[in-house]
Amino acid sequence: MEATELRARIEDLQAAYAECLDSNRLEQWPEFFTERCIYKIIPYENEALGMPIPLMYGDSRGMLRDRVVAHRNANFFAPHMYRHLIARMRIAGNDHGVVSTFTNYAVYRTMLDPGDYGRSELFSVGVYQDKIVFENGNPLFQEKIVVIDTSQISTLLVTPL
Amino acid sequence: MGASTQIHQTYANGHPAVDPTQVPYRLYTDPELYAREQEQLFRGPTWNYLALEAELAKPGDFRANFIGETPVFITRDQKGELHALVNRCAHRGAIVCREVRGNRKTMVCPYHQWSYDLNGTLRGVPFRRGVNGKGGYAEDFNPAEHSLTPVRIATYRGLVFGTFSDDVAPLPEYLGPAMREHFDTIFNRPIEVLGFSRQLIHGNWKVYAENTKDPYHGSLLHMFHATFGSYRSSQDGGMKVDEQGRNSLIIALKSDEKQELAAYTSESVGSYSKTLKLADPTLLAARPEFDRFSTTIQYIFPNLVVQQISNTLATRQLVPKGVDKFELLVTYFGYRDDDDEMRTMRIKQSNLIGPAGLIALEDGYAVELVQRAVAYDREAHSYIELGGRGTGNDDSLVTESAIRAFWKSYGELMGLRWGGSADGSNGTARAD
Image (cartoon, rainbow over all chains, first blue to last red; front, side, top):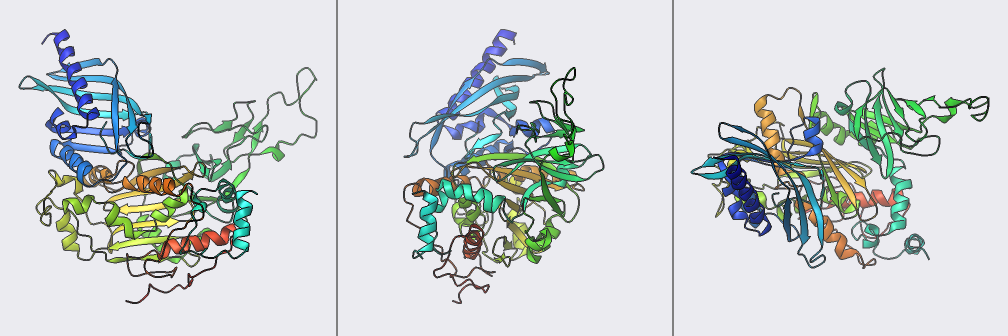
């Protein structure tokens, strides 16, 4: 695949991923990952200290599905929506078809509960450290490490970033 | 008339229904009361959790923290001794320690570069004798009189506590035998810090303190295990409260270890599930670690929670940030002798706890639901009579005895007059 096309395909993946979360189609979210995968949200604080504790972690598509099922059926939280702003990614390498990228993001959270309906705040800013592979011609995240600068979570983090 | 005066009068007049079973909501919202808490409670006769010794392993290690809203920092000096100091330069009051953690030989205030040893002793003052014989400090300037304000510290099992009080009971006595015994169990061997999380919760810190003394909400607010049928809530367990009512320990007992283990292994997860089951139960892969219990939540007044949920181990520190806001700083740890599999389990299980915790994230939301509802209704009050009116140990988890004990103890420390219907006994809940 040519460099231009590779970039375009991955940028489309990033955009579709953001749109999936922003439009509350969470059930589709695990489909952006390979069956065995790593999805991890880790505070910059821990990453910088070389400490392993993540806030959210999944190492299979099934575990990501469980997150979504919990989100829909088990967890209680104030209704809200996200809006991702994704900056231009840097392709850091291509190791036998595993493409590494770094992409800055910002997520605004807009509350949808009666007390705060329509109030938006900058909820999380950080960087996606992704590894992308192509399966049947489609790009998928084999690894998505979300290093959040916003180590201090406002209230709670239930919807994936 | 200030809100605080009103409270004084309200209490002095023997206002009815002010007792640990009926807590007026103004206690969550009154800024003057909050200011008094800083003096009488956080800077009063209490021991405040500051750090784990494991965070300050090497000489020169330091970390910034807070006692109430007072900035402090904790150091290990070159001799290996621990110190806690108010984080305020003796010169003009600037913050001296400006990083969350690190390692230094001295601490230098950036404003005028007064430098301090890690025990707080003033070591260097620029232009002390002035320049060309002009300016500078007088001959009788004595650096020894301008050290950083020390905070008295004590440690127990590797937990570092600090106090501003000369009158507070020694730490072991303050903790009490039941709390010490639990520390002896959890901190039974060297630990390794695995990471941190931070959460800003928009509610009064005491709403959260109540939450950690409230076993009633466990399986009702946190529906993860019930939803997936991954864990059968036995309700076996109990509540321990120390003599003063400040500190408490919720213990969920293992009713049947085999059942417990079965519930956590992939083969049988979902066996009691009616509709939903985990697609990947390795999330809950766990090892039995402690003999008698499956979950423990320990609260040490006023700012520490020690939690053990399955194989997740953590301290949670409450840092108040105003009457309607606090930060929850979670420090995750394991043991230094954990094997790789154990370490991996702890990391994976961290999914369950913290700000994104599958069985924990609701707590922040619950606190905010309370704060919002009580904001404009100062005279209304809560109803805290689950399990009777006692304030002592309880052999049930369907009880609010530790919450009543908290308010009783809080009222005493704050000099509020409490009366009413709580019997103050140290007995068990009412008999059925």
